[in-house]
Image (cartoon, rainbow, N blue to C red; front, side, top):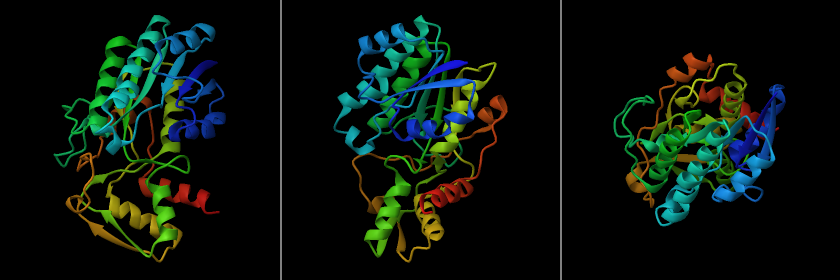
Length: 285
């Protein structure tokens, strides 16, 4: 039995991990919300790890308000970078493996190609910059670190694009959605199952791994698929990112190459449309 601490336990990915924990009998999960564990407090982390024995820490906590981060650098850096260093250093002292969740935003998304883990990073906003700092802190502080970069995460939990679309479909007769940013939606439950599978593995391979669902689409195509699945009559119009100005720039091309995680951990990845259909089916029963 491995004891697994999950930070950000009440967030979207933490909630998804709760929903699949019974699939992993060899793992004993302990979920801590930000109210229960302030990861920006080095002493709070040290005290918890002194009190309880953990084999693995899964850090799902993050400052994910991409636009707000542009004017709130201090808090974004504190949560996405400094806190990760505290976790990694505390884990290293105790021989604990750290599984840290990162993002496609560490890339600029300029080139229209699926990014490898080894491709040069070049974040174009505060969110991506602070997440990259967190990656570097973790890898430098603890050799037993696994970083999973993901993108476009959605689920029935928390706040995300899917839930926003379902709300807007009920409130409006037409909406406009960006059609020139490309990526692959990631079902948080699929990602949670991958984290569980890695944590359960007899032999861990450390380093950076990419994970998202298979296939690709634009945000407009994502919204259109949701509309199709819920049989909505709303009109979804495509617009360019230049027509929808935001405080933070987004990567235009967010596809991640998943060959490394598939080959290393024998992971089978569902297509985004199949996963979306399953999640929507669960939500609209």
